[in-house]
Image (tube, rainbow, N blue to C red; front, side, top):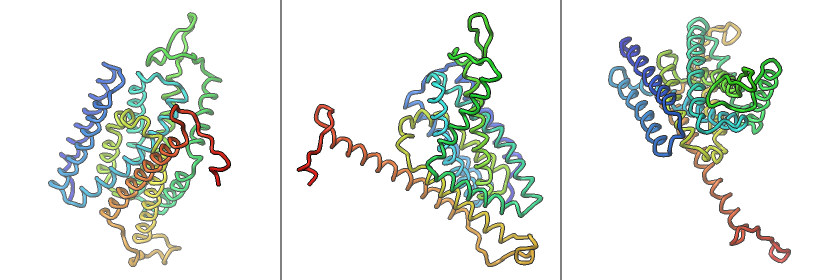
Length: 345
């Protein structure tokens, strides 16, 4: 069953208005959101996504609703991983916490624009070339391997350092921030502030994540509207989630393994789908390989939820164990306890 065009247009208009309202709130009242405020916003956006899925079920069918939920959760998990890099960028450039909301909102807008472009490009490629699923699948498997490697974020920092060195070579950039302004005056000379570098670093990060995430969601659904809607809902509330999680992000040390498993699973699913609809002459004589099974979206949904749950629980358990271990090796006044030779034996 097709999704009514009026619903598609109306949904996108409403979601755009919500994002604009969110941006205006930040510009009018820059502040550090409290835990309660962040929690309420995150719950609101999650509830909004679930309501959207319920409406899809009502006016469409369970398949469309399932595709949206699976796609939304996939993009949401990738967006949470994106927050790790945002934390690194904010720390590397010492962005005042009061202005981090503006930086995050600009990053979200850049991400939406980039993902919209990749969504349209992906839709055009899928429409014209069925073999593109082979490339998408192989790329996701490669990305999953990179995601699982511990030096992933180190390479991100090296990329950002290269960007900073290049910009400072050609542009006069001040050493201090001037609020959230991009330009300032230092000793009578007009200069750009470090905020420009932050925005560019966020934009480059968004570009890399867009390249990763679009093939992933096309492994869930090939309907451009659902792809874009899932991306919008995944990015909505990301700013509040950043402040809500706070130091908890550092404790989720196994999260990237969960994301890597999801990407690998969808990569395998895409390759299986490519074989099922195969038209390449050097594979099975250009005929479909009918005996290759198709993984349904309810199975995908279970794998996505299970992977994130296992990664999160394992991270929190490991963090709790490390905390208890540190506590047992610390004296009553916070001094380290030295273990003597007798105790060792």
